[in-house]
Length: 87
Image (cartoon, rainbow, N blue to C red; front, side):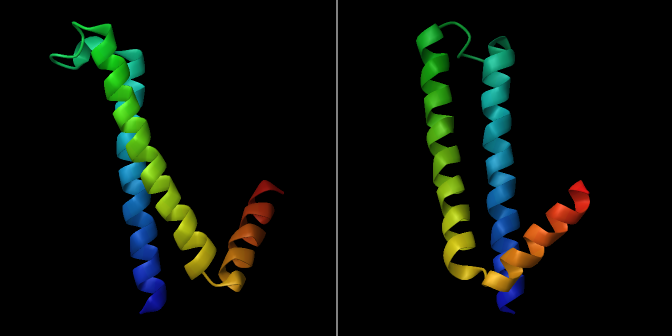
């Protein structure tokens, strides 16, 4: 059950991270597509700053989950798989 809950939390935070990273990418590449924001340069920067704050928050949560709740052997297994995949 523990592993299932940790896996669900990781997936949840990764999904939220990807959502907000996508928002920043859209703001950077196509700010005209954001209604009401394209008129003012400052509003775009503010919107990006808000999104970056959200990204930082979810990234921090993922790091805490990884550092304090994932057993060391799980981390080693994940790292071994990454090394094997690169080979």
